[in-house]
Amino acid sequence: MDRKVRVRFAPSPTGALHIGGVRTALYNYLFARQHGGDMLLRIEDTDSTRFVPGAEEYIIEALQWLGIEIDEGIGVETDKNTHGPYRQSERREIYHEYVKQLLDSGNAYIAFDTPQELEQKRLEIKNFQYDASTRLMMRNSLTMSEEEVKAKIESGEQYVVRFKVTPDEDVHVHDLIRGEVVINSNILDDKVLYKSADDLPTYHLANIVDDHLMEISHVIRGEEWLPSAPLHVLLYRAFGWEDSMPAFAHLPLLLKPDGNGKLSKRDGDRLGFPVFPLEFHDQKTGTVSSGYRESGYYPEAVINFLALLGWHATGDKEIYSMQELIDDFSLERVSKAGAKFDFEKGKWFNHQYLMAKSDRQLAQEFLPVLEAHGIPEDIYPLPTIEHIVGLMKERVNFVSELWEQCNFFFVAPEEYDEKSLKKRWKEDSPRHMQELLCLLQKQDDWSAQALDDLVMPWIEEQQYGVGIVMNAFRICLVGAARGPHIWEITGVLGKEETLKRVQTAIEKLTTL
Ligand code: GLU
Image (cartoon, rainbow, N blue to C red):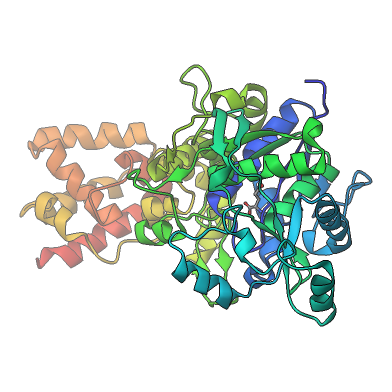
């Protein structure tokens, strides 16, 4: 590759960054890093009606949380910011010049048709499209004299600038993922490039001008922009920039879990999983949408999960660090077909990353959860908490779920699980527990081995059945038929607490 790789992530600040947008940012980042190139962040805020306050800050925070680093543009203080401003609303003057260039070269024209007039035409003409076949019926600078146009503008009449698409031409877009895409220009309309009403260009013009001025080498973006790509190619040509036109790569859509259609925000609400990286408080609607961060995901797990939604390397390796992704990523291996959003797989990834952490690290993460449940800080020494976490981590996908799994280590059961009682608490259980209590009271060595050596022979001698006694014992300590090995539980609880729980259970459950 002879040209310096420069890619950009160019979101519009219209709300929370959708997880599909995060994947686009990630693929751009991986590509930039692999080629020693630059990753830019540009904010495309030319549609002021869709602007959502806080959206830009949200995007920056989300990328930071995920470890997607920006080299140039919005959100970074760097002397590399030589191609700014990077917020399109601050680039009005620049766009004026390029709108003028297209008008002067005859590649664009001024149009005065009002929304009502356009609506009227749509009613009159079936499948009306503003293009070579209709433009000469409309109120624009192609059908009016220069003086007339000038007078209208001077009198303050609103207008738009439209691109003059040459009809009946095959436009070729070379896409790095899809190969050659050919579209006939007849299906393209004369897109609006600029609106005098807000003195701003539309997405298409701003996007092409900026990519050119910011020396973007590769445009990696979502598939929803593929239909716009031929127009973009024509714009590059109209500007005379075809030689330095960036390469295109349109990424496959993220699909609903069942594969039927594009993943939307509503799917997340409906199926109970986040579609945003961070929780989002929509100030306009007052609604809150859940985020991966707040749901307890590790950013590395989200990155790994997203990277594999639409891309895979040659083998069946699934766990990738960011560096490994940078090394292995290739646009050629991005699939053309949409990627089903498999939320369970996302949890699986989080589990893998959780398991890879040390017990010490997990214990640190678990401490705030304990605090939130009102557990005193000094309930156990830290090594004991590490031990508990180590015992239970296999069973959870998130640190927050540890509480559900091991709360009995911290609070004695107040109630006993109905189902467990029905199945495991027998008529003889109170008597068995009373005898066990007496046995344990006399025991000083509280190690797992010693307790096993004490209790097992006793059960055998009495012919009570190991399962029957131990399950009842478990219900006394845990409140249900769950938890790790019984001697792990007694080991953490200690003698006093163990005996207390057995005593309480006998009292509470004898009357049943
Ligand atoms: N502003 C567009 C978006 O929100 C960017 C499309 C592009 O990357 O060209 O997706």
